[in-house]
Length: 127
Image 1 (cartoon, rainbow, N blue to C red):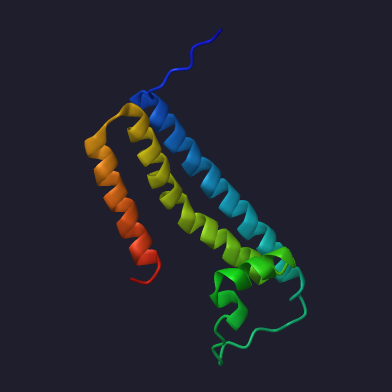
Image 2: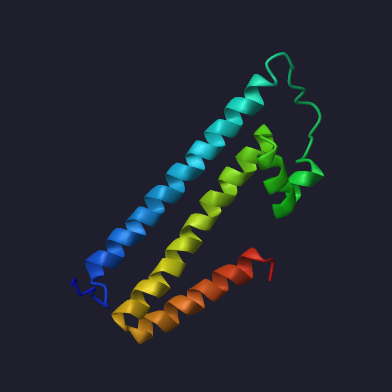
């Protein structure tokens, strides 16, 4: 019977945090690239008019709208989703840091990292 270790070493935490960053950035880039290809192929015959500024459509200003557009394979929706994944990547790293420090039983760093996570969430939610 194999004994599973209950604590993580610093190398384990570093490896996991590095992998979270790699996966998050690669996934984000793939989603944005897919969205860009869809967006640009649908607009090959449209000449841009740079004299008039047009902001993002209302459906791309909320998470539910972005997810609905991405599920519908909208180019803009996929690009926005990719950017959200990119924004979520450092947040995921902080969450995994909390888990890693908890597994290491390093309570000082757990506390500090939870405060950092709370500040991140506060700033993202518009607080």
